[in-house]
Length: 166
Image 1 (cartoon, one colour):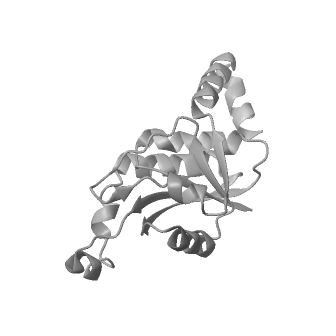
Image 2 (image 1 turned 135 degrees about the vertical axis):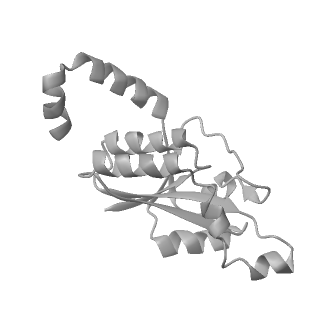
């Protein structure tokens, strides 16, 4: 089973990456970890409060969590788990430690990935993932979404259940 890291800003659209992962022929059973990276603050107070980062979890909308639950059910045969992690740091060495600790095999970006910070300490993970020594894969989520819509419209309603269960 592969463990896949997907950088995110917790926008609901970023969950479409799971469609691309689930439909990718080279990926069988996977666990997906959504990640957002923050640089460490220079403030001693912020450093002391680092373990109390529950306010970062507030950035994850209820809609995002509901979509994760729906995708977990939708792709339950291929996607064995979906999680959320935060990375605090800005060095490649620290990021490699996170990759090793989470046992990540692959980093996946949507093809037209655009970084969107969720607060002033957010950092673009692209420069970290490029140098972390882990395989990086770009998947086109727009093409997959269009193919899926086309596929869904061509199936008759009574056959849709058969296609999903196959």
